[in-house]
Image 1 (cartoon, one colour):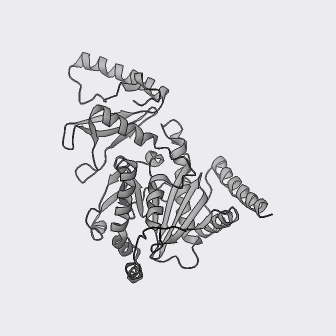
Image 2: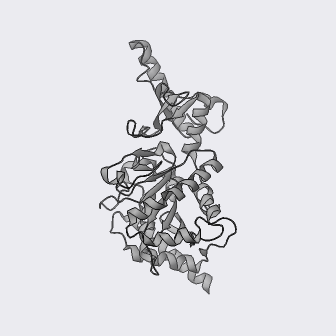
Image 3: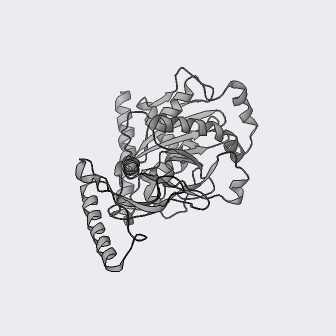
Amino acid sequence: MVQQRSEMVQQRSEISHIEQLLTGPKSSPTPSTLGRTAVQVLEASQNWIRLQGTGDAVLQHQVAAGLAAFRTERSLVQAFTPHLQRLVQRASDALGIPLVLVNTETHAYFKDPHGGAASAPDMLVTHPAFYRWKCGNDDANFSGPGYLFGEGASWCLRDCWEVIIEWKTSMGSDHCGALGEAIEYARRKSYVFKNEENVAADVQGRQFTRLMLCDHKGFHLVLCHGGQAVRCVFGEWIDPGSVQALVDFFSRGFQTESLNRAWVDAIKLLCGQLNLVVIDPCQQEPSCFLGSGGCGRVFRVCEGFHGGEQCALKVGLGDVACSQIREEWSKYEEFSSDFGDAREAVISVSKHFEASDRTFA
């Protein structure tokens, strides 16, 4: 009986989401409605789970108790950032790829498919290639050692963003509204806009979204698929095993989903083969992302080491994309022979696809 009820609730939720994708823009449900529906579905399917672990806690009791003194969300985020930085670094080390924690709370970059205003999640965990450095005066007032401020480098790169983090000073007993706000980001991320139909993208990366909802007491780790919450693990900062739970979530998710880092893998592979380094965003070079099209994405890199000669790296996924890039390369070579040294205009392309089954270019 419980299983039938769970399936019925899940089906109604999925049908509602599919109808919105097919019929076009409609107003989104309220955050409370989204959150309440998600909790019902997750509880019925036994995917609303209290963390039970062993090992280190993120915070000791005394430190955690002090967080209640922060009365504003910004000051709480500022105080907690060093703890999250350490966790993200551990996840980065485990994966062998760079991950950064970016404060995005003053920069609205999450587009609304219904024509409303863009929204700004509080933080973003991502590869450095996929965010844009941006630090306003208000950001500077809440900065600290190694703090990064900015936004997603481009909306088309949302299939590469790792974890979206939303903060509240206190969710209290009614967490549905806060949960609904977080889920709305997953809904927006999974929506396919009309002008994106011919843009190179990792569809699976858009569909899976990892959310982290936090307050002064603890966290909710939420996995969404297609804008629907499918699993949530929640706990407190003082819980045993909370360190490993968060590191795993940043690096591997819940291991129930297939984390496809196709663009990250391509960049890592090509930079290794061509002795290139992705340029870290900063005030002088706010973003290393240069643009995208139907067959690939272009990133600013430098040769050998940071500070080396800069060039552009075009990355494509799959045989079709690489065939198109071959044609582009031939045209650039013709251009170079006709007009002399065209190095500044030429997009650097790896030729290793001839010896690889899985093709990047």
